[in-house]
Length: 616
Image (cartoon, rainbow, N blue to C red; front, side):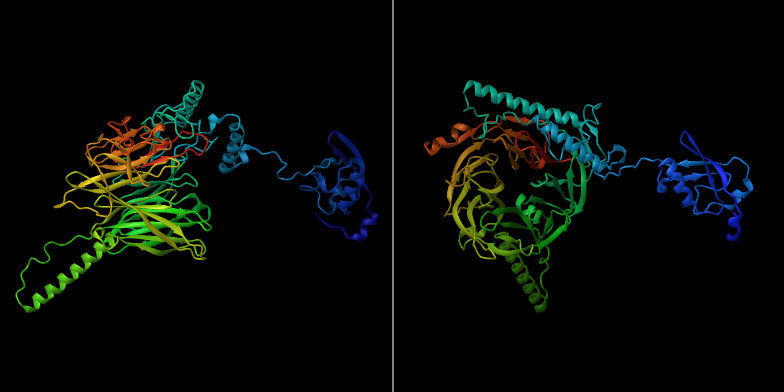
């Protein structure tokens, strides 16, 4: 462009141009050097296209849309046909908010697409309850990727760490099981017979609920570390596994969401707190092993607090609970076993002089002091209370044996029963002590304990130690399933203040009524080794798992039948139910270290699964 002095503008004449807009043509005049805005106002009067939406193009005279001024070069084109193209619309475009605009699938993130599918599936679920089967560790999110493997049948690798049946096949198995249960309920209702032992207390028939079929394997089969313990977080259904190399793994929706580390070199136990503690930003679960107890928070599953153990010991058993009251109090109880190895050869050399003899006596005194301290630690139970105000655990009570004959035996197992109001303490003499726990109404609650019962399982000719205790999931019954292990000792150890419960075999499972201090049922020897694990099922059944020499899992279908629920009128001799063989021996999973129930997120469904920490 070149400029002309403004004094020459008056001598310039108007130049005729042709304006093209859509299919219309307009004839008008422009003056070189004048403002483009004036021309656009003239065009607006002709075409009704607002100035803000006008783009004037004329490649022969200017580049791109016309800017502020009409170029002076138009003088040289006088007498030639000048065509200017107008781009713009007269109609105003109504701007819509982001919520009103249409949503395209291509513009959504995977998370947004997931949420939309889940919401759409939720609307259809209301009309069809069969679609609600949702076991969180096994199945994808409802409405998300459950049909992506519809062309597959049988086990296949989901990823490097997960192998399982296709999602549609898992879903079909659950739906079929639920439909069969529903049909049985209707048939029994038509017959008017509701006293069958295959009913649970709510009337849902769950006979032969567990198939014993492996539908998914979580973790590497060839990994050198074993899964020692499992826990299911009640608030979100996440499955937590603790390995003997110190790793803690978290499983949801068929894949591992996190791999963390315990503070010690191995994890022996994983125990989940109640859902109420997590809802209040409290502790989620606790891991124990290698001389330390680690409490984990629910947010991002991080270490919250580490509780060290006495040197030379490690937690033998954990129990968690919540005492419901004016202020809900969450507590953690732990007992300990001795891990320090005694050097048998440290005092074999004979002292050669007085100085060596004195040093040896001092070393022997130190060793005896250490052994006495370790023995005392193995005979007590520590209790920590969670303070919601400070978000910290404080050691409130140390539950130690009374200064009687019980002081000579170590505590081996802990369990809670009766909605966590009672703590059961098992020891190496077969003793069971029932402690009632209560809280004060003070601003800083204090737990008080009261020993309400003492029992002892006694074999005919030898001693036995408590190996496993599991409260049964039956409303209104304070029942405890107990397994024992025979212990070789020179003399028979007896708790003189305890109620004796005579047993015949260390390979049986005994269902004990804690309130009445009696044996309700005996699951006779289906295992050839000590029963290391007991799992109570939601339908009233029980799973028992034997040790290494047995390597089997047995399903006991409703050992306490409906006719036995009201047994106050039955004599003590007739009240004991003896089952000679289990209802079903599961083909899988074989030798396991722990068993946990995977509940269905649909509370109205009676379908569930079981997770097993299997020996690989």
